Image (tube, rainbow, N blue to C red; front, side):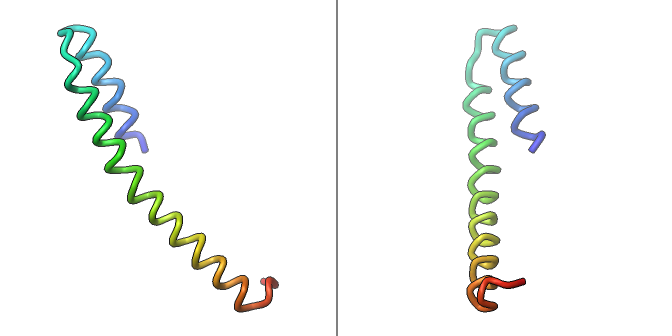
Length: 60
């Protein structure tokens, strides 16, 4: 998770020095590329846990 945060910070520093805001676009794309797969993975884990709970009758 530190990758997108560090990219945003680097974009802020670069744009403050050069008045070029393109690094913000790159940082936001990196954030989206990390966030979407992690959200899908989390959804899969939740669905698997839900299936286990219904198969066992809610008792672990």
